[in-house]
Length: 227
Image 1: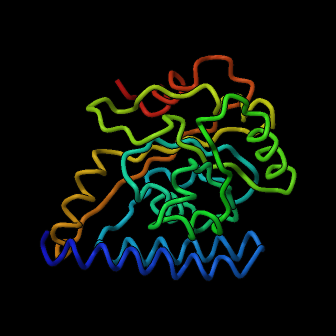
Image 2: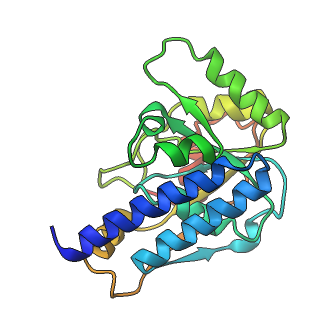
Image 3: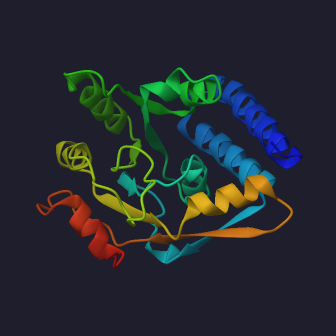
């Protein structure tokens, strides 16, 4: 392991846990949003990665949405937090159980404003109830419909049905976001050598009505002209 990789590991560990402690000290959604943005900015600066947003005018200034994004890397949530920095949109992230119990991410995830998804459970009523309560309290919901990181060559992996159900049950318009290119390769290069400035481009799509009956993956691909 190179010196830069070791340095990046300990920097990320420090930032994740120090901000996890700060997040534990507040229940105010906008304070959590500000802390999540500060964490995201610090983490991306440490990697020397900049974020460029295409069609930022499509971002609503406020409101409640089901934000749906493709998923390539562990820094996708920080990327999206930076994209939303000039909005008043605060969202609860859907986080898998493994992250709640993670040595690296656990404290941050438990305190940042997340909803636990335990995919080992046969009954999902508790999960959907937690989502409904979050929406009732005024939060948006942020989700990766692919369910896990896409490590294939395809632009997006198969979407899980749960995303469309969340939108329909809670009458949430969907805000599609697409992290372009192979962000995983950008991250890998940055971890190996952060002396070079790199960029990740994020495209904002036109909203998708929650009553849309077509397959969500099909509509998402259409929004971003993905083949």
